[in-house]
Image (cartoon, rainbow, N blue to C red; front, side, top):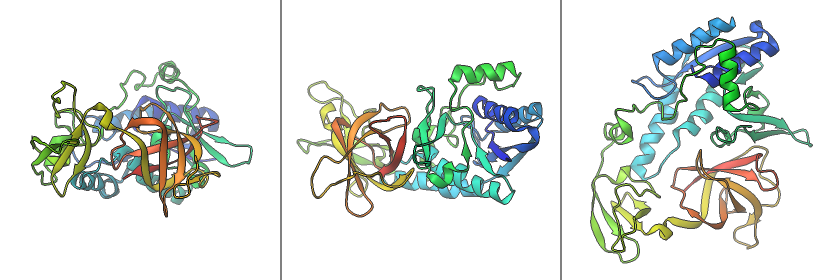
Length: 363
């Protein structure tokens, strides 16, 4: 078996490559670093230093290392939709779209063309095989580092050719392996931010350079009262509380809706930031739509499941019901924070909450 392992220059992918060398031999493993962002970077996996770290680790392991320039695809599939989403008043998740279009599409196609049998990454997730013989996507063993949320768009075709070598390890075990092997990334901090946005720049400045920002008005969702100006409606997100001030009762205001066309941001007290359901589109299923989905038009409780609305969000019980053609309603068992349009909701099995069912994008 020949495996192409994506090496970002971090400790997780370094140890993933090392474990594959142990298992398959150095001659069967090749490292690849993806050059994705063509601009300056100081916060992700696209810097010159990260590429050099990956190369040095590959040398230490005795494996070949390549750099693939996918920057044009990254700009088209990740950066441009991110900017355009904000211009429409949505909040896209660029890391999920990078996984969808680059790591598990563009890279997989490149690996196939070069004769590799599988692609491996350093994600904290696991691939299993269920009783039916079908592949399963499961949470990583380290709950604090689990990355199944950002992989929840993977399907049977992806999982058949994907390996997650560190998925059964805790983060401290990963770092211990790296230290034992003398890998230079053993103590390297984890990447925390969007790779194409510099820390000294921030999201607002990045977007201000790429789209026309327009002033708007803040409106009380209950009384309709005009509460004052908003510097840029395109920079406001549903659920946001920063910069929204306080109500007359002294409680903080939360954004409950953004209307780009009317240039209005609707706000309300904390309870108005909650919702009983979320509507999802652009659905992805690990193994097809699960049996037992309810009919949103015909009533019924729907399929019991567990939803996760952000990468580090708290898993919450919910029920799933079909919503028209190609849509899904996630009905929370109790009201939860509103899901911003453009964000992904990952869905897990109620009886086995480590097993991913699929995901969809909120509208």
